[in-house]
Amino acid sequence: MQFPLRAIAVCCLAAQSTVAAPDPAPRVQAKACLLINATTGETVFSRNPDSEYPPASTTKLLTALLVYERVGLRGTFSVDETDTEVEPSHVPLRAGETVAVRDMVQSLLIGSDNDTAMALARYVGGSTPRFVNIMNTRVRQLGCSSTVFKNPNGLPASGQHTTCRDLMRIFDSVLAVPSLRDICEMKGFCLSTEVGKQWVRNHNRLLGQYPGMGPAKTGWTVASRHTFAAAAKRGGVELRLTLLNSPDKWTDSRILFDYGFARAGVASPASTTSSRGRSPKRATGS
Image 1 (cartoon, rainbow, N blue to C red):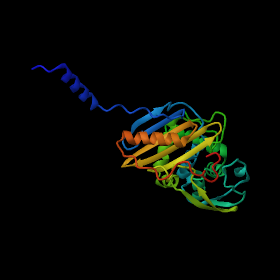
Image 2: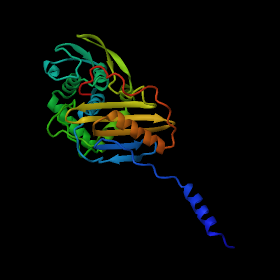
Image 3: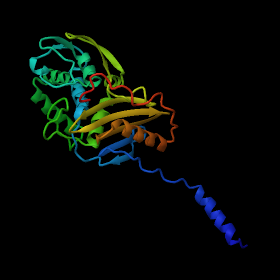
Image 4: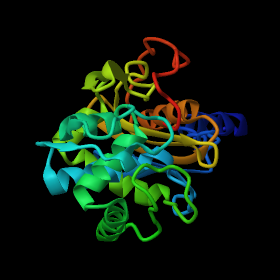
């Protein structure tokens, strides 16, 4: 049986039209990023995941993890003068005051306070240098072969660097601790110290703005530019993202999460509000 050439051509075109075009790669500006489907373990997208960049305040994820592993979230300790000698973001803490470990870990992960990082490091490690040694030992245990820390807060330091792949390993370890995961997605908390009571607001501008946004840790310095570790969950699918050296982590993260959920076949609900709201309180260095 013979078919006219025109009919054959139409059939071929119809067949081709049923084949879905591949998703275009997300157009993000970050120098390095890694997007993982935590539900399946699939790498959804990556760019230079093993390239080394400064971590900025995402460093505080490891600081919090070590505090939890060594002392938990219980107890109190006294602030030393050396803990306060650091640039903002800070509480600010006052030398000699007594603070609760839980409050300080919340200050660390929610407010991204640099004096809190120094105080916790000294308390847990005995001194900041000893704590930094513990940090570098722990990252090797986690399989982070391209990460070196020089301080517990992520402020600029020569030779301090990580990669998106290593940062993902650290982030995964933090999210495996329910209490730390909960803290990383709190919108804020009331902190009482000698300077008074203050509402410490989460630096993550996507929290409550991007549908499904969950636990995260922000980072920024002039040298590092924007850094970020974040998780978002919709329709039973959790995506985890790390990015380094971005001019705009908020836009990059939205693009990458949208891409990941689309790849997973999860519908994209309308955002409740724009991500370009007010800057969070004490956002310097976040």
